[in-house]
Amino acid sequence: ETSLWFGETEPRCAHPDDPSGGETETAWDERRVAEAIDACVDPEVAAELRAEPDLARRAMNVLFMRNYYPTRFSARPPLYAETHARAPWLTLPFRAEDFVGVTFPD
Image (cartoon, rainbow, N blue to C red; front, side, top):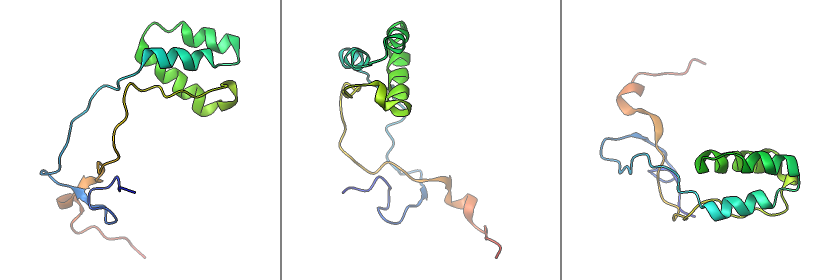
């Protein structure tokens, strides 16, 4: 399985040369979000989810509900418009020069 860390099994600090795609908006699939809401077995919750006019907020609300109340859904269709291959993306959340000299007391 491809590691999500740059440096594979040895996570490292962020480096200016690391590739970065920058932040992008999540591409939600409106049809799949609607299917997920249709799979909600609680009519009140389904109506509340359906009432959100903004697709991104509606999708995130569905995602939240499915994660914290999974038994309220009879199916779990994917909510995203596309999938991406697993690839290194993570570094430790500090620069190497910020770490020099740091010690942990015994």
